[in-house]
Image 1 (spheres, rainbow, N blue to C red):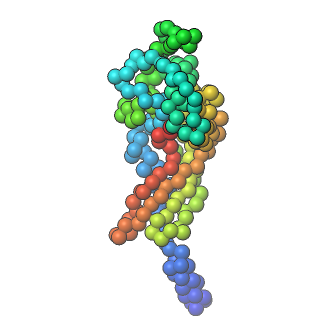
Image 2 (spheres, one colour; image 1 turned 180 degrees about the vertical axis):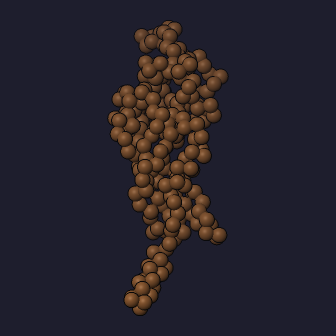
Length: 219
């Protein structure tokens, strides 16, 4: 029995040497990392409205003439049309006021300003212009810990989002961000989302978060 026990222990040691020993409580760690950058639980995700800064309100839309370059994602005409659409849709959800102030030829000109409801979700940093933020990441389960890169564990996890406003459930809004599956999943009412945190191991053996994928700014 003693010989068998020694053999078993030797096998455990050998496996640890081959695979690396990682006893980190990643679920608690990842939750804390999310809570540290989002202490109020209201800015796990920020959706970009457009390049409208504080001193530009009230903001009156305009139109750009010309052809859209289909190969340029950031084509100015495309982006201006997209901004006008976003303002209109968010106004329908009560985040902006909307006032008809004139016409450019036969095209209506609308003036927009933030409502009290809109200011509840407004990103006060004004990063890139106007953004609406919401949500708190709640880690559900660690799905996989990937040690393929030496001293750089990648942790896959599932989570759900709390403090999600009703307006993100409007298909016309969440489809504006269709390249980001998490936004569409929330809009469609799916409970579980997936995230990924990358770490590097420092010389003293402690971990440093290098990158997290579980929300934040979405254009």
